[in-house]
Length: 307
Image 1 (spheres, rainbow, N blue to C red):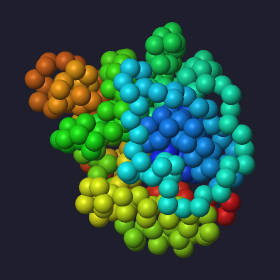
Image 2: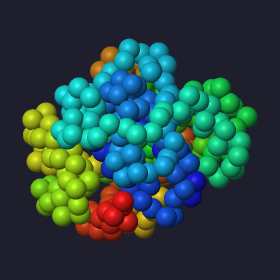
Image 3: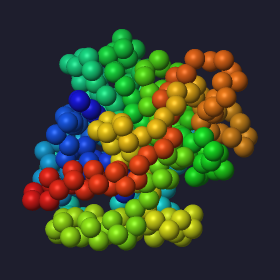
Image 4: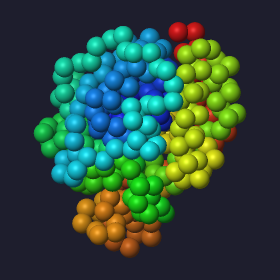
């Protein structure tokens, strides 16, 4: 599978990057970055740092530094001021690419007709690609995204951060006609990492000790902000679905994004009971086998342990 991972690292994005890079089933064509968990400069450096920590020769392309229309929203209360607080990750060794993320995605879409886009941050880059290169939209085979929620949000009562950070972009993506797989909060909150997972990371060597420190920082902010006892690995759910869809349960639903509501701005409106009679536009992931998730994650990470 040829993928472009579009992200805003972010602790859980870091784990998604490593899972994609560690998996032989996936050809990680490049990592693109967007403003989200932190400002673009930070998310771009963080992506490069994570790749360089494991000496992974994957190119990083910076994308949009602000949402399409709304003001910038970042999440220092969860990810720290740098977007990747909690561990002394060594500075990057490789340089950042000059090509804009949106143009890189277009180059890959021109080259391959089976390209998979995996956005784990706000959907600004993906929406801009759709707007700027409409002739290439049909060459995207699937978008597997982390975002939204059915029953609850995490930045407002109904809005999840990635969608809330650029609802107008999300609306464009969900209305694009590209096949979409959506990993909402209802699913990702089933993948909670604890001290047990952190200790397992520490046992895999010095570099994974850094990842364990990042995980424990992430766990501490979730405890402080949400009173949740564990680090929720939202973003790796996208990559894990590509690798092992059989460990997930899903339903096809029509999903739209609220961009005008006073209380509901940024909500993904999921038509569970088909009340709109609209044709489903997304495969929404609902359940995952947590035990198998972590077994596979650590199996894949094992291939990076000696790097």
